[in-house]
Length: 287
View 1: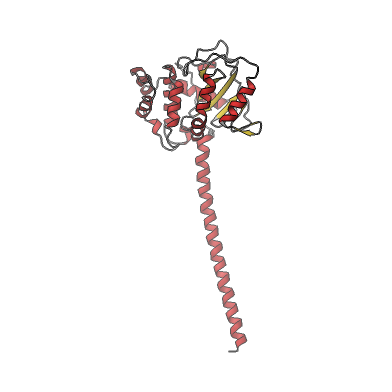
View 2: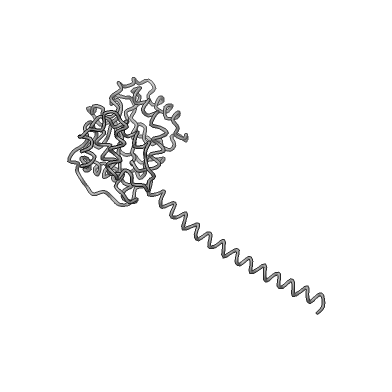
């Protein structure tokens, strides 16, 4: 066989091997893309269940009892701070929501300082939709426990304790009433026989359902939803990212020329004579 023929066969064999190797590489890449796509879809679904309200809707339920000091239509709002403060901070959050936990751990000291200075009146809407998508009862049980803490006059401190000790979204630790009661021991004076009975008996379960029903009917679809005087400020306001410093700046700008309020109690402010300060669920522009 001539050198030329041998060279031609070698070239053809090398080309065939190269083509086969390329086909195998394409197959491996295709398999990785398929597996990766499935993984991304699973991750995306997990994230969405953490922050976005599902299409399911809570059944209509009128609360038989609401925690003491709650305000607004049907007493669905937990107020913190002075009701005559010049600005209203409205917060919608779910106890199992990871994004809410991040928000609270970063912003609760600043919010507390603004409340104590009489600059803001915070209105909390404690929703409980995550139980619909992630197995468990932690959202509802924790929301009820927060209602019990409000009824006892210790909402703010207990609220902060829950978010500092928030489990992973898929861990239903808050579905254990004993866990909720034990966390209450971090708040001086909260855990009493009345508080324990309130948590164990789900005394405010109807109220919890009514708060969620109200959220379902609103234009808000995710938590946390944070409004300053009715304007969405999370995660941005006027093209600026929300930070503790920016929150103080925005509140001070909104309060310019206005008299600060008289700081109220931390967990149970007197109900105002009017609920006009509560916004009528405007469509969020951020968050």
